[in-house]
Amino acid sequence: MKTLILKEYGTTLRTRRGLLVVENKDRRQEFSPGDIDQVLILSGGVSVTSRAVRLLVSHGVDIVFLDQRGYPVGRIYPPFINKTVQTRRAQYEAYNSQKRWDIVYSFLYAKIKNQAGLLRYFAKSREEPRLREGALEIEMQLDKLPSALGDPQRVINFEAQVARIYWGFVVELVPSDVHFDGRDPEALDPFNVSLNYLYAVLYSDCWKGLVLAGLDPYAGFLHADRSGKESLVYDYSEMFKQVAVDRLLIKMFFSGWRPDIDNGLLSRSSRSTLLQGYKDSMQARARTSDGEAATLEQFVKTYAVKLASFVRGEVPSYRGFIAQW
Image (cartoon, rainbow, N blue to C red):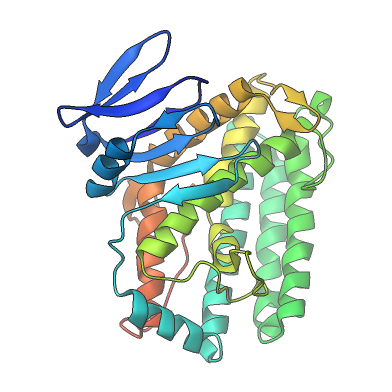
C-alpha cells in the first residue's frame, strides 16, 4: 500500500474513470484507489474534488491535512469503526479500575525497553561500548516503575527521570555541529525541530489506529484529559517513537543531512524529505521481541486493536510494542 503525499502549490487531486488523477504544472499521474492507504496534504495550495474524496473514503483511505509543524489540522476517514460504543464505554470504565495502571505499565515498560534497544542498536553499529552501559542503566530503572503506579505525578516524574538518561546518550549520537543538548520541544536546533515534526506525524498515525480500533483518542490513562488534547494518542505513541522517529533521525543527521529552517519552521522541501523517510521507515518490515513480523505501520494498528480487546475484557492482559533490535 502507498501513501500519496501532495505538497506542491497548484496540485489537483481528481478522478477519471475510477482512478485518482494527480496533476500540477509539471506532470500528471494516475493511481488506483485500491493501492492507496493514506493521502497526506502538506500545502494549502492543493485542491481535492469532492468526487476524489468520495472515491477515497469508499476504499477506506485516510485523508489528512498537516500544518507546517506536522500536526494534523483536519482529516477525513471512513466511518467503519469496530465496536465503537462498546469499546469506549469499557475504556472510560477502565480508567477507574486496575486496568488503567496495567495499561500505563505496559506503555512505559515498552517505551523504556525500546529506548534501551535503540542504544544497543547504535552501540553495535558504531562499536560504542558506553552505549551498552547506557542501555543497562535505563533498564535498571524499570525496577522503580511498579512502586510509582497508582500516582500519576509519580509516574510522570519517573518517566522524566528515565528520559533524561536516554536523551543524555542520544546527544552523543548526534553530530556536534547540530548543537543538540537534549530533548526540548521549545528548542530551535535542527534535531529538536525535526523530532517535533515527525512526532506530530506519528501522533496522526496513532490517532488513526486508535480511532479505527474503536477507542477514544482523547481519553488517556496517564496524561490528564483536557479539551482538544489527544491524551491517549500521547500515551500510546510513546512506545513507537524510538523505532519510528528517533532511529531514523539519528541516521539522517549522522549521514550529513541537515534541514532548512526559517523562524523555527522547516522548509517545505525539508518536511517532504523527513516525511518520505518516515513513511519508508513505517512501511519497512519490523519484528517484535516476541517474534511477530509486520510493517511498523501495521503494528501501530494491531497494537491498538489489542488494546481495545483488553479494555473490553476479551483478553486477560495487554503487552506493549517492544521491537526486536
